[in-house]
Length: 274
Ligand SMILES: [Zn+2]
Image (cartoon, rainbow, N blue to C red; front, top):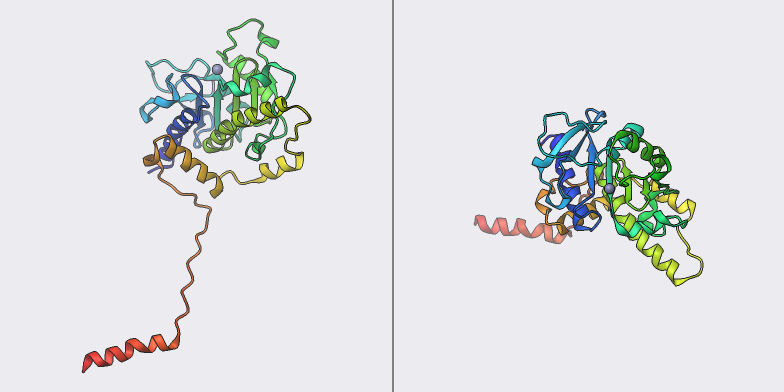
């Protein structure tokens, strides 16, 4: 199987996982940058992520044009992906979601911030982008590159950006990492909102704790464990073809053999010859 096959398989898995974990529903999408040509990315045609198969994946230029003639409709908001790839060379995977859990933080002055250990990789700041600031009354959907670039500008060098009254966009160094960010972001929002309802001060992750989480390798075994779990829950265990390569497996030590036991087979052998 080629690297490209691996990438496209992960992209299909990412669609299924995000759907099964409730991050996307009929709407929302995930993409992966082409590692051999950073000016292109792969994304499904306009289809709900739970239904996406390998045959639905198309390749687009960063400006959203499909590279091959395509009769099927494409996602209206695919410009979110191209604009983020254009602005952030290190980003290899993008998710756009309408998860309800994060929306209160997009329409109120209370910022969304990491309060769960697993949400630490979301980083120190989760900005809010309001499409009305520059574009006035719209459908709130990102329907061209000008709007996409404005969103990417608001994201700047952060991991995720809230979109006022709409959803969020997240950016990762791999499609697996961005799936993890997108799964943990609504969970973090839910816990933060519950804590706020309890009243009193809410203790989130400290700046140092967020730094420690950001230092963790995105391809570590502890993260593959979640990928495998989510894929299996989504009914896609048969699509898991790899194991993390970075983990060395220790060889089991041979048990010490007492001298007496070693001698026993010799006696038996001698006996056998007689
Ligand atoms: Zn949207």
